[in-house]
Amino acid sequence: MLNVQDLSQIHCEMNLVVPDPIILSNSHDGIDAPTLKKRKLEDGDDNCAGDSLLFLLFIGHMLNEETVAELRTVESEAASYLDQISRYYITRAKLVSKIAKYPHVEDYRRTVTEIDEKEYISLRLIISELRNQYVTLHDMILKNIEKIKRPRNSNAETLY
View 1 (spheres, helix red, strand yellow):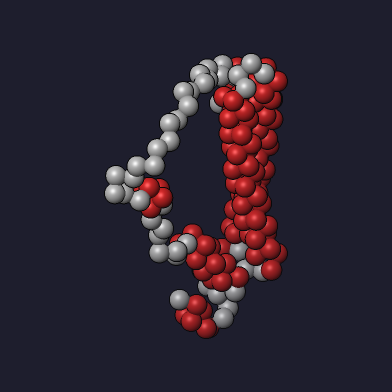
View 2 (cartoon, rainbow, N blue to C red):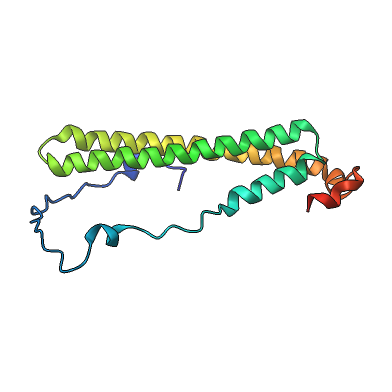
């Protein structure tokens, strides 16, 4: 899917119809509308962050500092890649809403096409970067696998 050389193959027509205006009324029918729109939040525990911290603590005592630094670098870069993807969707949504508001302006449609092409190329680069980083991490961890299995420190039990 990411081997497309001609970017016109990833284009699709923007078939947006301008919707009818929404008629607002003040009748709530006994239901508080803002409370209906609120989502229930989870308990706040981010298992992924806790697991990664535990992993870094566990591995940090056994691997050399270079490996831990590489793990942190890859983690921060992966987070920035996720942030970039969410920024792309926000930007694209703003452009699509402009198209819905001003359907006669062709520049907005062209901008969506260009931003899609730019993100496609960016995703290809991100995939290459992630592949290279994970191969490097895999190599570093395999080279230190004995230190992971048999730590020098006799206090390794206290990490659990």
